[in-house]
Length: 323
Image 1 (cartoon, helix red, strand yellow):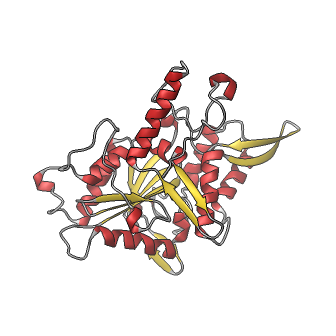
Image 2: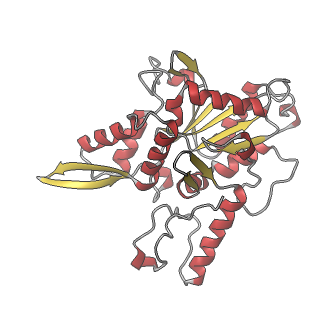
Image 3: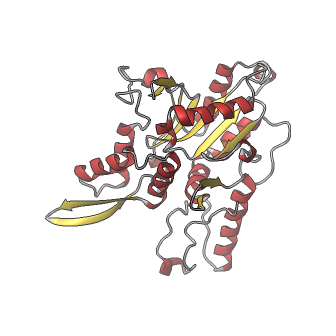
């Protein structure tokens, strides 16, 4: 970011476009909410109430799970998009399990009944997934319309939301961005059924947190690849976007470093911090080395091969953050 585009001189729209430029550099397709809205030539949905891009989701399911007949694809889409519970956090946990563990479906094929797991993300070929960012995506619910600044979609699923503010405006602080996302949870809850990460920034500071995190649990992301901390003079939003939304790291974070804590009355969603994320991945690398197995840093370990192949014992397929 040059002095001409210093956060102190940027409007909220400038900051939004800069964030989209960084996402574009990471290989995301960039579209606008206006161009993708219902009735537009490039429409991605038929109704402003829809938060999942069903066309992209359907194509991804078909590509990742080519064995499925059309009826099973339809059943999978219905299971993902229908309400699971009146409780938002419970809905979010149910969806997260679908994302990590697959969607259970049954179908008839060639005269036989099959019980299958449908995968929503291709872990073997990251580029086979559909990567998209849309700004000013209008959503209508509860008789109101809201427009989150940026939504990040993977295979048509809105997995991350960004709310940005202009630091030059006295009342447009990063805390106001956080408060706005909290209001969105009440105003447009259907969006947050699928949310894995919430991002807030005023162009100077940037923080990330979970659906249930309070302001005190929204934290900065201080490194891009874990090799070193970014200089204190760095633009925090740039480090956060390039550190988290790198395609491999993003999928690794949401599949392997998110956990739900349920004490019987309150469900809390927890996400690893940057140092936990990189420390655990380093520990995985050391574990492979200790057992004499090659470690491939480009491999996503969301689903491991069967135990006899690696011999690492049970429960190594999902390293969870101790946060």
